[in-house]
Image (cartoon, rainbow, N blue to C red; front, side):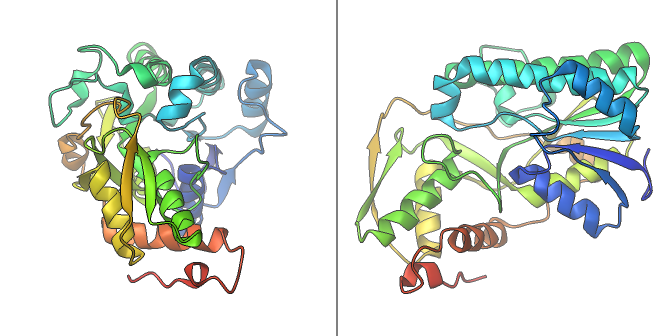
Length: 324
């Protein structure tokens, strides 16, 4: 268990979820947050990670660091995804153990579950069937991290927890055209189509897969909440009731931006898992639920993206006011 003075090492504080965790820890008056820039600490280097943890002596570790991407990146760069993520999580989890750190939160993903999983997805469905091929390398790495935490808990009675959020979104996301997840990709395409006065966007797949979304600050809230909890279970799903098809999300973003663009679907067979709805009854049993509505979360996210992409102050799109 931690308190406001506990030394907390947050790995991945620059990413979308990591930056939300950092911000929320600060707002809740946690006084000793330890971070490290990538240029000064390569988390893939076992020796350097172990020395860093030995020197800094954190009381708890939060692993928000990972190599992440959308369906294109996961499918094309499989070797990078499995190697980097295995190295990062192994070094941090084992490094925490050998340095006597008994409290740790490892962030996984809903993509660890089988492709054709019974819905909503319970934690016990892990490894019950085949994975989705387009992101199996990333998923296998995350599963290995979960099993590593589970094994240390069973053998050494550590308090290592694995939180498994559904699709995350929020400020400070990655909007790269090829490497981003589906929602930031949709936001980028819609905004840039407006800027170019185009009347359509292209979307991968057929638009029918359903995705559940969670706001990054709700994940941050869950991380802090469960860092302060003792739980019997290692794995805990973190989700919401915000579930729509890819097509419906595209239309929802357009509605926020007061535009109606045509959608052209390309690579129609590249859909990934058709549905990933998490069962969050375990998190609810421990007293945690998501608090941010999709309307509020998307409003903040869109405003953040538009502020980041100001290129021409005379362009009305980049002076756009999002309705809350």
